[in-house]
Length: 197
Image 1: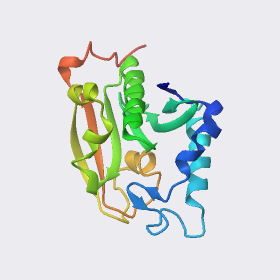
Image 2: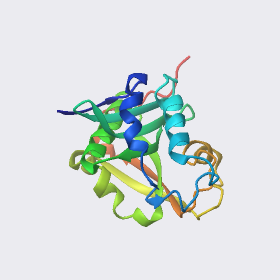
Image 3: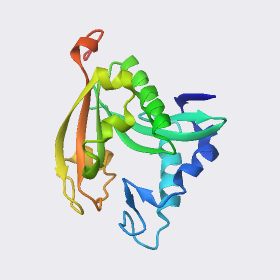
Image 4: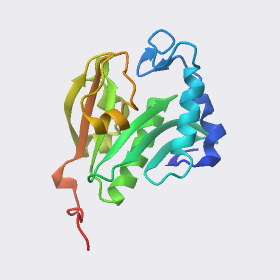
């Protein structure tokens, strides 16, 4: 049976298989170093994921698809305190269908708290295929997007929010695009309340 839920520390062991790979952002991370060559990138990524997204931190969440007790994909996210947005910070999957379920779970949660826009980072090589691969038919229709800017390989993002949240202060070894995806106005139930006393 397949279902997508918000992940917790209980899922730490169940996500480990997603980190047993040589690929990250569509490239072999053993040849395109995201860290120093002597650092075990997968172990570092796994530890950081568990410590950040599964530990109950207020603004960090991960939504995963579970098949027969095993997490087959996840989408990690950061909920902004600066504006009514969220960031899709990481995604890993053994199946694109399962990744769609994880994204659907994240979108469902964030829409329920009035956040109808999110930013993501991806390898520029996948610019035209990304939506087709990770958006379910339902959310593909409801969401539109704009590519905000490109960050050339091995350079620092100029903008502090995305540099800290999406890039995790790492100069990515491939050309990367920062994309804003947003719920079309005709699907928005009401304006988000953005003020209080």
